[in-house]
Length: 511
Ligand SMILES: [Zn+2]
Image (cartoon, rainbow, N blue to C red; front, side):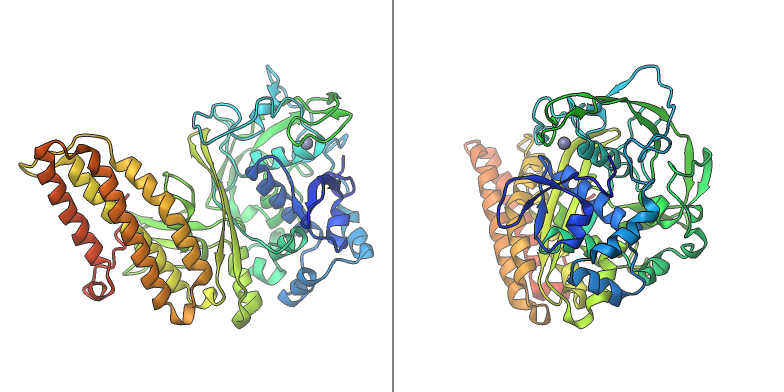
């Protein structure tokens, strides 16, 4: 199966149609409006990233203007054929010498079942992580390619000494969502000028092939040695699919197929990357430790939802006297600001990733945020909104903490309430934040911000009442409740605009 010519892309038409498989040429050169169609949101995001990376390999626009043309209209068939021709050997899943993202002759004591290639199917303990039984029994070629790519670049390693991808074990991916699949792909392809800007060694590594075409030695590898395309298709393990077996249909996407992949061999590839490779689809966070600058990819490390990190996704921030932490949005997000300048469009920001603990995935997190027109010139407003949201979270959290723990000689309720109240706050605050982002007039933000403060304050107050109510038949706790409520009001008042001038903008972060 060749990803450049065969029908492997699982789609359906936006206007509604049944699921079908189309080729990349059909997708890029046709004028139909498609969307991806797979049973899991993470598989869809992985398929989209894979399509973006393949398109990037075939056609990298020289300038932003050229890119705008690709975004605007379908690619001529002859252009596709010319662009794909040199890459026929890169993308064949069952290539006799260089199978896609695999190596030949991997020796392993035991074969590994396909469920290890589908992130989170085994070892998941979290009930949010729902997988239908038998999802990985046997995968069609398309699902296998997507799973291979996802395992290599978006998920924790296999564990037991296996390495994770270049972005670490569970990076957050941020992409721009267009109004249909073809446009989404081009909106996330970088033009040459953008690549050179964020990857200074691009010129000297331009001709590099992926590691399954041009194998590399294990050991220390400097980031400057990894070129743009090699990095996009980095494979951190040695993997070889076992020959497929006959079947009727794919256990993941359900398509009718004559054969499926059921297992693979894997072996460790021992490498150490010196530095952080600048992946164009993910935001990074910079900190300083003992005068040493450290950089890592943003991840879902707590149960906090994506909006709490929204500022990282779109606002660039250097480390300076007032900011101990720096942040670097994904190159594709920075490029879109450059592409459309003052005519900035509404931005649909696609965010995805896993919440993981070491090699085990606890939860999938996938969301789309809509940012209203003008967002790119008012990123400070987005920064402020996120700070406010976190401020209200802190206010309710601190008040409930006082109720649970007590203070000085005042008895605490001694029950576990903080976590559940925080989760409730996140759940109820999410639509408020989403609506504000999509509606806000960035040049006149205050009315929407006032509405947001009002709504979040209401949520904090009702949550406080609901959380403490069941314990108030204990007379001692009535006093505790009064003290906790005082704490709540103190923090809520600090979040009102007039007190912001006093220095406390409620942006204090709870670790
Ligand atoms: Zn399938």
